Amino acid sequence: MDEARPANRRVALKLVFVTVAMFGFGYALVPLYDIICEVTGLNGRTADGPVAVAEARVDESRTLTVQFLATVAAGAPWEFRPALASMEVQPGRTYQTTFYARNLMEQPRIARASPSVAPARAAKYFNKTECFCFTFQQFEPGEGRDMPLAFSVSAEIPRDVSTLTLSYTFFEAKVNLSGTTDDQQRGSGV
Image (cartoon, rainbow, N blue to C red; front, side, top):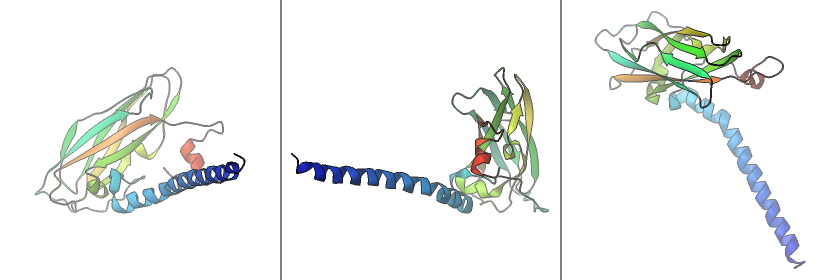
């Protein structure tokens, strides 16, 4: 029995090491995942800030459908919806619409919208020049408002893409005692 203890300890230490190594490896993949998504447009991620759109070539021979979806993170105290369910757009032309959000709580709240474009390979062709998703949104108790979105779809978008879906998830941003959001603490530029 006493001879088995050192062997058991070695096995336990190896298991702890493997567990810590797996956690560390997973944690280290997050920045790599972000870089891969940014470079390839995977996961439908769009730019985190406004895109400067020079005089774009408008492709008047094509019309695309852009669908708008709005979801609220589980348990978040918000009403959130697009003004339009969809819009017909010509690649290269700039369009505007709004999304409506309302704080359902009786305390001030700060919210954030996270965008995604489907199909994912089309995300790099979807350019937002103005978006409520670029900044945190502060709402007073019961306050509701329309939030602007200005966008264009690049004329370079592949011809086999005829429908894009712009989806936002609206969630409550956690604010710490210093008055900064969790994202600001981690240093993410939004």
